Every structure is written in C-alpha cells, then in structure tokens.
Image (cartoon, rainbow, N blue to C red; front, side, top):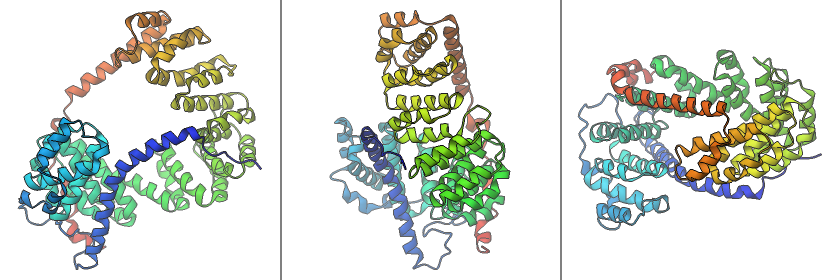
Length: 506
C-alpha cells in the first residue's frame, strides 16, 4: 500500500517565512484572546448581561468625552524614556520594523497614554509595513478598551483621526476585536460608521466573527440587519455550520445552488467532513447529485486526497474509475493538484497513472503552476516539453510565463530563444515588456529592444488593449468618491431594534 510522501525539505524555508508572518498576526490575535479571557473573568463577578462588555453601553450617555491622559497610564512605564523621543530615534535609525515589535508597541502605547489617540495620525504615516501597522493598532485598541470600553474608544477614534485610512482601519480592527466579546454591541456601533464602503466591510467582518462565536444568536439577529450585510451574514451562518457539523450544512446547498457561493460552501463542508469521517465524506461525494460534474470531480479529488494519505492506490483507483467532467477532467487531476501542493516530485511521478487527454494535461498545468510558485522555472519548461498537444502546451506555458516574468525577468530574457515555439517566445516577450512597464530598469533598453523583436502583432495588440483597459479603470476609481456618492444614513443603527430590549428575551 503506497502512501503520500512528506513535504520536501526545500519547503522548510517557506514554513519559516510563514512562522515569522504568523508571529505578527498572532500578536493581534493575542490581544483579542487576552481580552476575551479578561471579559470572561469580569463576567463571573458581574451581574450585567453577558451581551455587554464591562465598559460598553450602546444606548448609554451621549457624552463620550474621555480624558485622554487616562488611557492605560500604567503602560507609560513600559517604554524606556520619553516615548516621542524614543520613537523619533528609532525612526531616524531605521528601526521601525517588525524585529522590534515589542519595543514599538510599548513606545506607542506610552505615547498615546500621554498625548491621546491623536498621535496615531503621525505614527500611521511613518509606518509603511502593513503587518506592523496592524500590530501597533491592535495593541492600542486592546489596552485602551480595557480602560474606557470599546464603544467610548470607537467614538473617540471617530472624532480624533484626521487620516481617513487610519480612521477606517482603526474602526475596522476595533470592531473585529470587540466582536468575540459582544457581537451585538460591535455590530450596532459599527453600523454608525459614516463611509458606506467601510461600514459594509466592517459589518461583514463582525458577522464573520459572530458566526464563529455564537451562531445561534446570529441567526436570531439576521432579520434586523441592513440589506448590504444580510446575504453575507447568512453565508457566514452556512459556513460556520459546515465547520461545526458538515452533514447538517448539506441542507443549505439548495440555497446556494448555481451561485458563486456554491463551490465555497461545498469546499468548506468537504474540508471539515473528510477529516472527521472520511468514509462518510467519500460516499457523499460519490452519490450526491451536484449541480454539475466539475464541482463533483473537484470535490471527489479533495476527499480522495485524505484517503491518499494512507492508501494512495485506493484513492487513484476510485478517481480513475469515475467519469470525466464536461471539460474532460477526471477526479484524479484534482487529486494530483492537492498532492502537488505538498510534494511536487511525487505529483510528477504520478502523472503516468492519470488518464491521457484533458485530465492529464490539466494535471501537467497544475504542477507547472506549483513549480512556478517555487521559482523552479527550468523544471517547469522541461515538464512542459512532455506535453504533446499544441493547445495544451500553450495553456501550460501561459500559466507559468507571467510568474516567471515577474520573479526572474533576467532569466526569462535569457531563455526566450530556447523556448520551443514562436507562440511561446512571443508570449514570453509580451509578459516581459508588460512587467517592465511597472518594474522599471530590470532590463536595459537594449534588452527590451531584443525582447520586442519576438512579439507577434497579435500579442502586441493584446498588451496594448489590456493597458488601455487598466488605465480606464484607474481613471474611474479616481473619479468615484464612495463617501459622497453614498451619503451616510444616520438611522441605520435603528435596524437593530433597540437591542437592549430585544436581547433580554434571548
């Protein structure tokens, strides 16, 4: 009985990068978890309803003036020296980076404690790393909310920040951190964000967290939600059900049949069912009446990957015995796609066991994309040389050339003459020239002239047309002002039906 191999060692570097990024994201998560535990501790010693946090009142006093010097003053002592001077020194010495995350968080917290939230206007402008911004804002929100409560912090941020981008991101993160503790309060307050786009995205984000933390309460509140959010909230209920009880989520499939959400819900059901009850999941995938064969075979490939971890031969036998979809792709092509994500070498070794024709060609294409993600372009070219059908060979190379042009343009420039057909040489040249339009000075003018000589008239026209479309989109995006085009409705929060009264009946 053959099984899947362990991931190759060259992936360790990618895991290390992921761990580093995860550490930054984890800091923001830590703030949320810590606040959750704090809320639970407070809740055990408080008579206030569970839907409230200890410092929040949606219909409380309209006086939201807060002494800015009272923000978490204890944190001021955590920074060594005068916080503004410390920050300026770090900035002058190019030390505003993720490697100094703890010191930066303490310094920012101390600075805000002394001078108020307004200092974030300056700090936000000086930090270009989005992950670092996230950690710093989350640190301020976490600490300030303990002192004055999430809702007062929300109103203070609304009136303090002059930078629209900062205000929008701060309110979005605040709502996300508040949502696990008090989803109704977070939703009701987020409904008061003036910018329509930011309001909708924040409400959707709260609904996502709400579905994960208290799905039954969310179901009761669906009818109160504004139309811009309700469809997303309903989808989140479906997704949360799929994660908690995959078999129960099958009842929702008719609701999303033939919509853009169908594949998303089926994938979520499959991912959580196959690890809990693999045999039950494979029987469902084999016997369920999917709306089309493409979804069926994609789902089968997903479940069969779980079987392949312990019995690869059985997984391949089931896959190759099932019919191909209307694109001519059998389930084994999707199984190979899952395997390639973990072990490209094993996926290549399995290609002879895949049905010839469109199924095998698709498997080649998927493996080629994974090779390009690993920047193994030479291996991808070698692999593509084994494809015998001209159309499939074109599809294969079209899937790797854009990545090659972006990540290693000099190497692609050198390899163009050796590409097997005029079509591929022209496509490679087109992607190189296109890439150079926004990554200047990668190739010299002389090299660009050499590249352009390989381009066919058809590919040149395609490139020009694409640039024209992109330019039009950029102009349109500058003309439209969402906040002025969609004025704020101050009564939107009323749709929550005075939640203080309603929640007592739950």
